[in-house]
Length: 361
Image: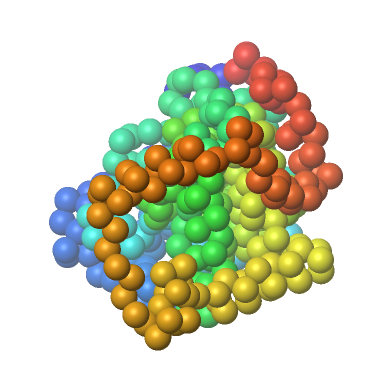
């Protein structure tokens, strides 16, 4: 890492590496790790607690007057009224970790008067440090990171996270997932939101969306994304998203397209968008499963005769002879209204992404 890093970021990286060392040692014999259940499908291990303790001790030794907000211990440690608050997830991807699936990370961010100013996400499996200081760019180890350059959603690889806690709204999420899957090149669900956001910042994926997230899941990743030239917010595109429980990130052009797809599913969507969504969902639920199913229902479920290959060829030839010279174009499907917050990003030329300074500082 560069010796010109901000002193507070250097301390955060030291804390992340200390936690990562504990995680890597435990991963050598993951079957021996004691696991507890916070709630259904939400696990915590002794490694989470040990890693969090190591991080807090490192941070408070350097900055005893700072506050702490950590996933496992909350605000139990540190100063209670400081303008400097470290937001910590000691092991994001615990379920992956206890199964030996190598996708988890340490996430540490510093909030100063409510704004994230320092961030580090450490991937102990690959020994990769993703880091950023506000206004100074984002880095993967010593290499400058920039968000991906793809501008069409249909060419993009999008990551997400599945609802897994009791009370999570699965049906709306499945509808969101279906829409995104039909519009992009592929969807992945690795299982650690902080590392997902780091990958968006590094251009390894083109976008990310998830619901049910907490500040410690997204605090560090949010700065990585913005310092790499991307955007992050809730599903309607609002940048003040940290406590909204929904998160979406991408480069500006892809972000605008994701808002067009996901905005109506946001709990902050307008009444008109929500009414339209309800109507669409009701229609999809009441519609027959397929044209074949509808035909069977009308005709007493009689099986349609199997069409032979020869019959298909004859039918195609007849259609070609009788078809008019120019067929009418299908009616255009109206595009969803684009929120003003991201309309400018959608209209700008492909090359006009936010400027990112080249110098580290």
